[in-house]
Length: 219
Image (tube, rainbow, N blue to C red; front, side):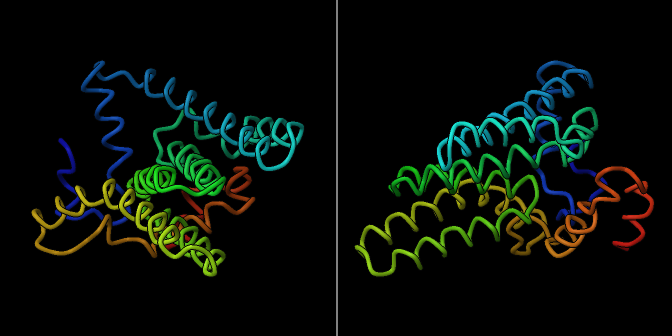
């Protein structure tokens, strides 16, 4: 039933993961097993992207070790079978880092546009991804401040256009449904707090039940 029951504007939940699951169900029928298979492929893609980043930025051995560590990491593996946004975030954040690494070697408007689009889609999975992506652009502009201003402006603008192309359709939907300017969700602070608490070792390794103790701490 779409987003019925969650109000005109979403709070903590961003739209991309529900749309992803709903799209799979619409195309192939209500098959939880299919979603779990796609989750497993997303986890494999995360490990491969980590391997490629490590290989390109450091050495092939560093990339291999990093990719294997990611593939076998318990806090990533534990979500693969679950219907949680946490399954969708590692490939999104890793793809954003991968696109950032590509954008910076060397920076071009086309690569910046791709980075912005990937970052924008990740933010549609969880809005807390957006500040980090903007920080990458600002950091790059600062480090290049003595360079060609036209090139700097073109690259930075392309990154922002990519983010806007991904996010603004949902912003327009929020405006139509609520009359308020809400780029993605209203719960950015809440999402950040929950991310900090739920990633602590005692919850990520399930020594304490996360949806009992971590949830209480967040509240």
